[in-house]
Image 1 (cartoon, rainbow, N blue to C red):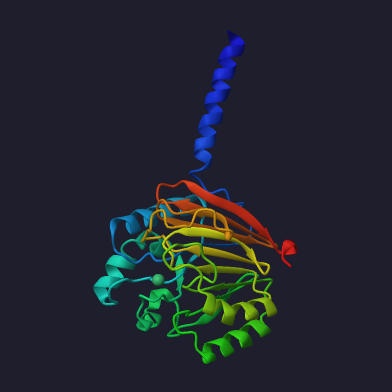
Image 2 (spheres, rainbow, N blue to C red):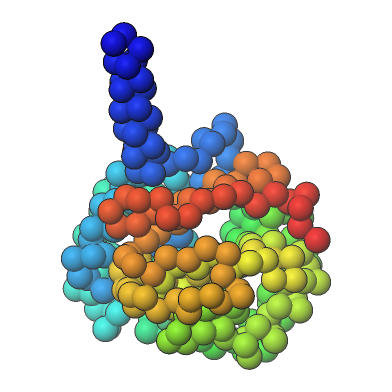
Length: 285
Ligand SMILES: [Fe+2]
């Protein structure tokens, strides 16, 4: 009887801890690490965006990230004061109040004037770079990839001395999304630069689902375009590109860069962890 009771208790405890595990940050929270969230295609102003934003705040309590990168389509349907309010300032108020900074990139639905909107930290630039710890970020405007932007990117990548070089923009170079798929023309322009100058990780949006693409040319690609919008069931099943995917609900990514490791965790609107893992610098190329 005694043995059986112990067994039942043990099984119940295991079940509880397994269910909790999926509902909490699993990132290492290493001292001095670079911590951020990534969201894309979020600016609808509708209930799912608000619910996902609330989930981000609940995870921030346990995983205090300092900033958010946005992967475009930040504000759908106009960029007036009321749009900024209902599609950005209200849903993300708990994050903004906590001092979390947003670094936006622009999508095809975004007005270029968003670069002047102070809380997006673009300083009037449609493409720009910033550094956090040992990581340099390059926010690109993939809707208008003109020679001037490419020349700027090459100059900045060439002089970067960061351990990690991360590019983010709206249109994915690789995607198994059924609606748009891979932006192959853009890939032909950007990928050679990424390879030459050692970009290791790329984030994009545009497709309204989450996908972790198998490393391409040694580069890890994430697509997170379901932080407000959702195209349920849109990921092509059995795609050779997909390492992991989620197209059943909205989601956001949490990322922690600690030394030579990029840890990531993707969380759904209901708080379920739908993907997680680590990218090691030593394993690249
Ligand atoms: Fe888009």
